[in-house]
Length: 357
Image (tube, rainbow, N blue to C red; front, side, top):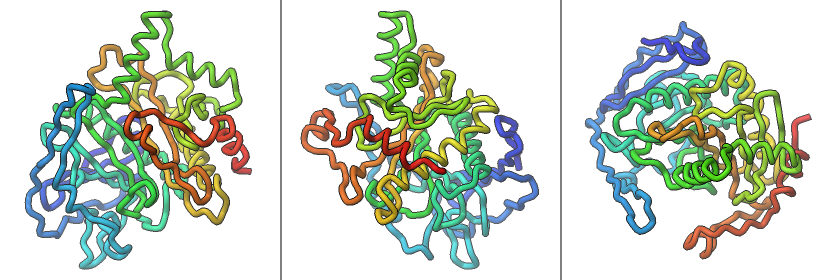
């Protein structure tokens, strides 16, 4: 049993192994929880069958993971693999309850010496969502995200870490339990490569940091700012791709989650929970929970100058109205040329309208 001594060092970290050799880590807000329950499933040892190939024409990598075809798909609630183990109903979590649990994905997109994929279970409550968490629970999730970023920074096959959540069947989620994922990519992703190139070009031309200038421009304009606190700024970007898209930045530029200070960590849960709750109110009470993708953009570990990159979270939904989804059309899927149905200023207006009282 280990205690993490990084940010939010009061969180207890308990690593163990599942029956097939995969790692499982419990994160608890208190240090008196027994995490000795063993995985009783008769699982064979896991082997990675993923492969990464390089597309020279587009200058990007493509992963192949044929074994994912057999992954668990929309199981009934009483067979959810992310719920705690109860009696003879054995799951990925041997404990009969947990606060936050992280484990190696049984069906990873990357693995072995070509990266790592992990599942982050936000709560043992199957019927909850991230927006239902308390600020203390959300802070514990942030601790787990930060710790996993730190651990994966030392993984020899990982160059970049993406912490993200897909929520909703419309997004393609196959497990309803509140959870997210962490991808430790064996390469730098296309979006990040483009950001790094844009930032480097801007620095060479102007001597200034592009992230800083974009954030300052949004703050000065104000029309797309959704909320601002002492340590965080959330806004709809001027050239948003998705119908409702919010970018959340710490007030000072830092390269990754590990670099956040205690004040920024303490304020994050309130800010993030407010954004998620506003998303659920966007389309009225009859529309149901809003499907979304939320992910942290962090500097690659081997970037030439990591201090130039700005940590930020991007939160967006593919829903454009209560009963309509934003599907990628031919131009968007085939050419990457986006056309949105909602003006960013209108999206920001709506996100301010649904603020908590």
